[in-house]
Image (cartoon, rainbow, N blue to C red):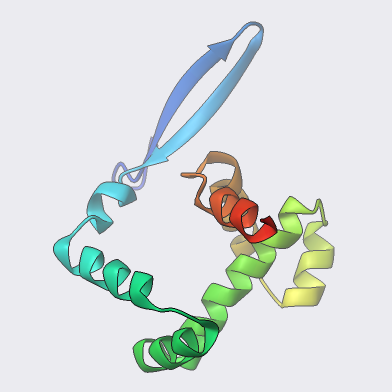
Length: 121
C-alpha cells in the first residue's frame, strides 16, 4: 500500500489465519539528521522538569508545545481504552489528531509504549 509520495509503506505479515498490516514510515529516515541528533542530545542533557520548561519555552511556541502535550495526553487516553468522544471532550483534540495518534500507537515505532512503561517504573 503506497500513498502520498511513498510516505507510508505497507508490509503484510501473516500470522496463521490473521493478516496484519504493519505500516512503516520513511519519516524515520528523514528525521535522522545531524541537526535532529544535536537537538535530541540537548534534550537528553536536561536534568529536571524545570529545565525542561525553560528549554522548551525557548525552543517552541506555546501552540507547538500545547500540541505536543495534547498528542501525548491523547495517546495516554487511547492506551486507557477511552473513546474518541471522551478524548475529544477532555483534550479538545480533533478526530483527525486522535486517529493519527492511534495509528502511531498501533503501527508506529513503539516510542509511546516505551515512555509509558518507563513512567510506570
